[in-house]
Amino acid sequence: MRRSKGRAHAVGGTINTVLLVGLFAAGVSRDASAQESFLNRCGAAVHDDEGSGWISVPQGQIFCPLAADPKAERSFVSYLRGDFATIADRPPDVASNIAAVGFGDSFALFRWAARRHGNGVQFDVAGAVFSQFNLDRPSFDLINADYLVGLPVTARFSGFSIRVRPYHQSSHLGDEFLLNRQPERINLSFESLEVILSQEIGLVRIYGGGESFFRKEPDDLARRLVHAGAELRPVLFGAGRALAAVDYKLVDDGSWSYAWNVRAGIELARVPSPGHPPRVVSIVADYYNGTAPYGQFYRDDIRYVGVGINLSH
Image (cartoon, rainbow, N blue to C red; front, side, top):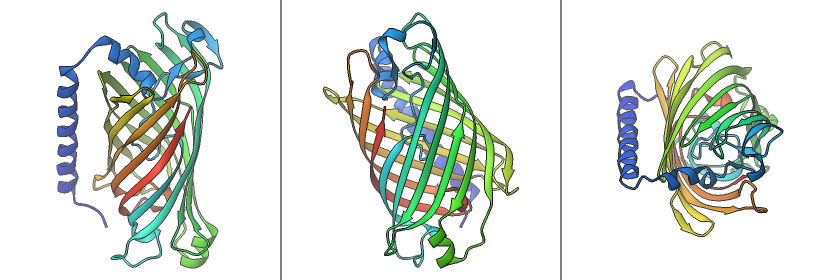
């Protein structure tokens, strides 16, 4: 069920318009203090005592996670309802109910910190597991699990940041799904090199970049993809802020298929003790449309709405 190339370009044009509007709105109220505080707003930031010099096993992050990216390394639980194509055992005109669960983290190994607080270059090891469960089955069958491990290198200079991340992903179908559906099983795994550039302007963050897949199985996996998005985090009250974000991917799989996710919600931040990076709990709602982000179902187009809770530290 592939979308047409023309429709992909139309959606891409809509997303570009949204990004330009966000840039204009941010430019109206741009100021240095808001730019410097965005690192705390996104749930990253570094420890006050580790502001300069060479640091091993540092605390905190200098690259804000991508709030609306379904494959961002975070811990979450979500309820999703929509059209999941062959993923769920339901007729095409009947909505399916899916639970999506993720466990992810990024552990900092080294950081060279510049004199300006929060600036520097950091090397991490990161990993995540993303699983989907069929809530329409009595035993909540495991459908698919994706395993990711990466070695991100991140850098920050004031409001500009960059992430270069080589990573590996492998995907596996659940036993109940295999027994009930007897699908054609795919031994899916790949390595990819991702580069994401990010700029914070006032309350708005925009980012863009892409990936190149340099080893892949099966051979018809995408060769590369374009990745872009925007985030807005105005403060609502004290430690609470609103979140509005969009994430868009254009996948070169021979027909340039697309996927986009819109996310909105509330983030609640807590600083464990003075000087520590914040811990953030997010309550969010999503609308997703496009190529499935679940590894074994990369050929499917899906559409869903969902609600969930995300945790970061």
